[in-house]
Length: 280
Image (tube, rainbow, N blue to C red; front, side, top):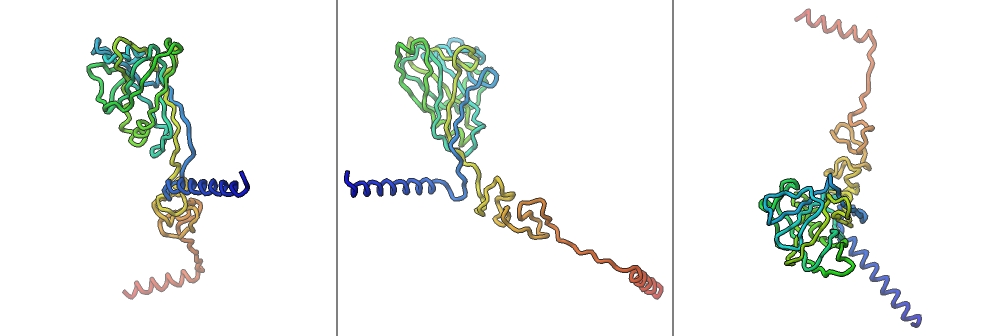
C-alpha cells in the first residue's frame, strides 16, 4: 500500500472514530452523568434463593425446598425462578444478561416465559401457579455425549432483565419448561448443595447521577438539584431561606451589628419615659 492510500485510510479511521464518539455523547442526555459498565453475578443459595417446580401429577404439592427441578423436559412440569435485581440501579442499560442452569438429559426446546403475577416459593403448586406471558424466549437444545450427565447451559435473557430493571414491581421471575415428550430433564435448584445452582450474569451501564436543574452540578453533590441557583459553586445570600452554596458552615442569617449605649444615656431615656407617664 502506497503512502497516499495509507493517509486516506488513516483519515477515514479518524473520521469514523469522531462520529462514534459524537453518537455516544448524543445518546446520553445533557442532564445525565453516565456511569461505567458494571458486572454482577447473582447466584443465591438455599436461604435467599427463590425457585420451585410444579408437577401436574401432584397438583397440590409444593416443592419449594427441593434440590432439583424434576421432569422439566415434559409439559406437565415447570420450574419458577426469580432473582433479586435491587442491586442494579433503576435506569441502567442492560448490556448482557444470561441465565445459567445446570441440567442433564437436555434435548429439545426450552421455553422461558415471563411471570406476570406474584408467587411464594413455599406455597406454589401446579394448581395455584402464577400467570405468564407467551414464550419470551425459545432455545433449541441438542443433547451431546459430553453433556448427557450434566452441563451448565446459558441462555440470553437481556430483554427480560432490562424490563425488570425499568419496572422493578414487574419482576416476578421466569417460568421454565419444555415440550419434549418422554425426556424428563433434571435441573439443580438453589437448594442443591452438590451441583451449580441457578445463576444470572449481568453486565450493565448505570446512570450514575442526574443534573435535574442543569446547573453543572449532579445530584450527588447538589443539595437542591431542582434549583439552579443552589449548588456548591454559588455564593451564599443572607436571609433568603436557602443554603445557596450547599455548605452548612456558611450562615444564611445576616451578620447583625451590636450597638452599646452608655448607662447615662439609658438612665436619661428612662427619666423621659417616666415624666411622660406622669403627665398622662
